[in-house]
Image (cartoon, rainbow, N blue to C red; front, side, top):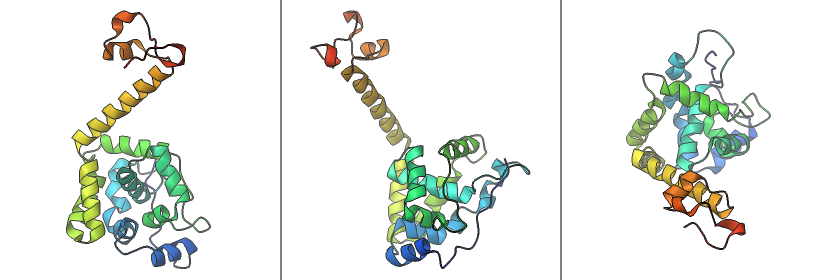
Length: 208
């Protein structure tokens, strides 16, 4: 897959771009990313991730902006792609404008999966967030400081571990509530000797 390149000129007559440009506060994170996006995430920053020839990718500058907003809002890949497709603020921040112009309407959530994998295999796997953090530190604006705080917290390995642990616990609780505990669930709850799960709608005693 070859490197896709975003348009360098956003249509000033595009209604979404015009509306967001007038309605969003200058301190908005969306306005910040729109203003600094081309300098933060030029497509050339990702040249090493793609082949010289082949089908063009979604412009990495667009994907990088979506990944930053995804991290800030704590969204899944599917949720982030939905926001980009339907939320005018996300489209404005990514520099693609509305749905009737030349900008990309949307893309599959697997594009985010693919980008993370390409970054993981590269020499600079954290380049998107390194660049965003550097810009936030240098900005000095309210949006920059908010971006700095949010990205620093979101990028913390300890926080990521806590979020993953919480997600695992929630899935285990859901299985128990529906009477579908696994052997692993029973061991985790110290119930390996009970011979089965008595929780959920088919039992009177809960696993917890």
